[in-house]
Image 1: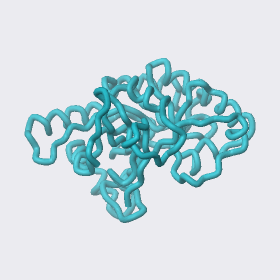
Image 2: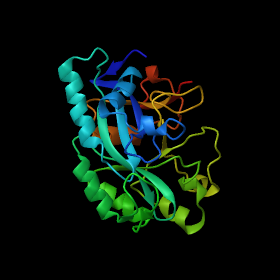
Image 3: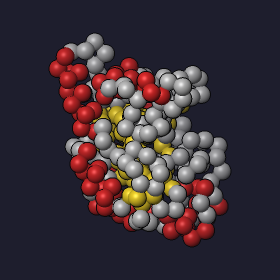
Length: 269
């Protein structure tokens, strides 16, 4: 898609949910041992070739690859690789929260592996970094507050699937729906019927989509770099630019960006 610009901003192809070999289930399948050996350089080239502009690196409860990816990005630029294009890395984690909910913690591109290690300690994750074999001792609200305290954004992951927010009920869901620091969600199926409690509260959280890719390639209907993404209109990519885009987004997930709307979700076969 051709970039369109308004007042210094431009549409950016954003993958909000991406895994690297730092996640224990990356490459799951018959070729997993080989795929787990892929390098940060190779991983970045997957996203460059897919035309992705911004990617939130959200491994399971770890930010182990963030610094390595930043180094590999600079090496690709310096080498003048034929497939090089600028990709903005948003450090993050897919946190397994007490109660079984998965939350995407997305931080500013200036943040590092160390910042994510500190965040994981602050929410007291009781498990193995890179795995989802445990949960945080902190509650969902406390986890969201911890992410906000370091300037990050919390997005409940795949709310309509396993370990998603809308799979829980009762007071747990009610407390989350009242959280003012949550204003976006990852919805995998646009026709999914949201819980009545969400509707009753007249909530209209911005709906985003990420690839949740665990493989470098795939077939139609599968998830890989470039298969699922969100168009976000920002100036220079930053956590504040992203926050404003999410807060200003229209209700529709499938809007026409030529009309100047702030966010657009796309799925490509």
